[in-house]
Image 1 (cartoon, rainbow, N blue to C red):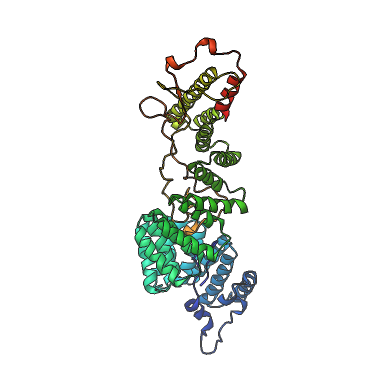
Image 2 (image 1 turned 90 degrees about the horizontal axis):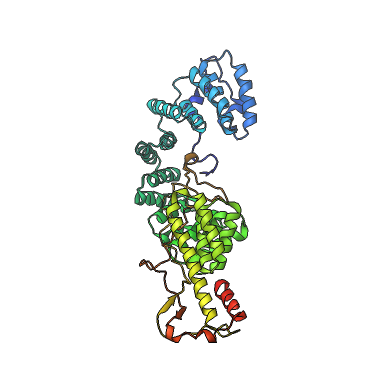
Length: 485
């Protein structure tokens, strides 16, 4: 059994029954026609097979139609192996015209149509092959793939089931049915089929990755991590798997391990945008605001119109007291995301309010400090609120919609050829890892949240104007210290 990411489980079938017509004598006096280099066993050298079949077709012009049919059929297979699906279809057409009862020719033409993304024609040919008595499990597998590609999950699953009945040791059929179950949302059934596929083919990393995706969608993050571990043992260089494991650690709440996996991805591929974005969020959650800002800035160097990253960077900048930069980022986020303008406007207003309050507090501290003294005075009385923290990022999870192929590729979903796992290093498919807007930086009572800094404002405790020197160099330094750290 071989696995191929570019061609997948689709394959042309053996030509035993149709080829027999060439080898059988037309009469007791007529010897069999030799296939030479045009037999199915030499299609691996496809260009040679095309030439051999073409020569054979020329010499068989007066032979029995079934004999010529096999030559066209085999040349069609050679064209298929070369990726020349148009010429393959033409040769299969001629093979079927000459021998309309050859079920395998219909199967193979259906497979070529599938590669041309002509799913209706593919299914029609598979139907004819089955009606003619084709019982090869791959015919049912191929028809299931075409039906799944057309969104017909129930009949596709039935075809995969029939393929498994005919060949219970076919890991490809279990895997295909598992993908259909994932697409259907039947995760338990999908995992059961992935279990069978891993048992039958324990050295195929991509099956463990796909099962990990299904377990991730069940929020069974520990089991998903186990599968990603196994996949990485089999294929240590797969950055997409390493990134996906990082996402699983992240969702499990293990920020240190998540960041370590993101670090590993970025060390090998510094342009892996999704890893920078996710690491920025993890660092933000770990209160490493400066490092979070660095990651968000890296993301924006590639995606300079990403409103969520502008928003997240603005929140981190607020935590650092860098109000002007934060306000500028909120403005950018609002410009690039009109649909969330209302919530962004609220956050922008909160940032400006916070800036004014910190400036007022800093100014008051300066005016109540002796000249050159950077220490604030404090006494009992009414507190003057000074905001130094914003609301934390909410824990709303990233999008749980992971297609039947990949956790890191969205999505956007991708139903790529046969549901194969998308392999696009650096592709920012799992961009769902962007937390929702933080709540307004307030205590929900109309007042900003209090910080650890509280300044006494009891009038009786304030120094008299006579004790306040002006101008105050120390006051100015105090303002700068509180505003910019």
